[in-house]
Amino acid sequence: MAALLREVVEVCLLKRGPQDLPFSPPAVAAFTAALLGVQLVFAAYHDAGAAALAARALVTLLILFGATLALLRFRAMENRASQTLLALAGTSLVFSLVMMPLALVLRPYLGNDNPPPSMMVFALAAVFAFFWKLRVEAAIWRQALEIPVAAAYLLTFALLMSEALLLLALVPATVPATP
Image (cartoon, rainbow, N blue to C red; front, side, top):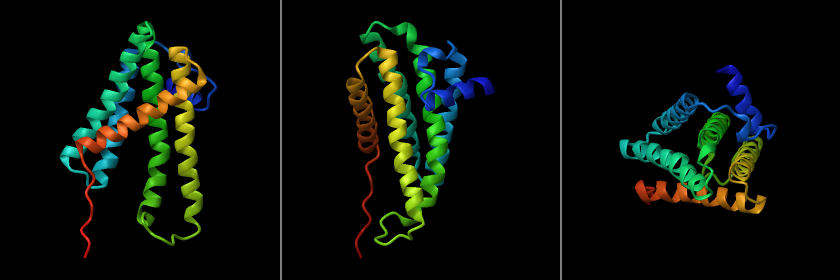
């Protein structure tokens, strides 16, 4: 498993593509379970209700499996499903583990008009990690679907927006009451 994790990190560093990962449905299941676990623990830590937790899991599975399998089927490349799913689940897990500590550090300052200057480093790191994740996912999609770079970025952005809108539709954001 350590060797596989090292390969996933290399995908995150753009040194490998999804085609370089092994065909391993058990690894896909393990990385997906770990990703869901990390997301749900993080959401629960932030007092998300049962509906929000269920929505988070549902949307993650829908985007990861539904979109991936549909896109690969559309391009007649179903044989790449396991490796593509492993690359997407594995890199999402790695980026979640990188971004969650940043989110925990920044959370007390959300909405603060004058956060301490020291928080700028964490905010910039979070922005960098977010855009690097988009870059990695675009590279995965480009290689898995054999599409142009611009199409891969558009697809990655469309999937990100779909995920956010699905979560918002399933669990609307609560607006705090004004005093």
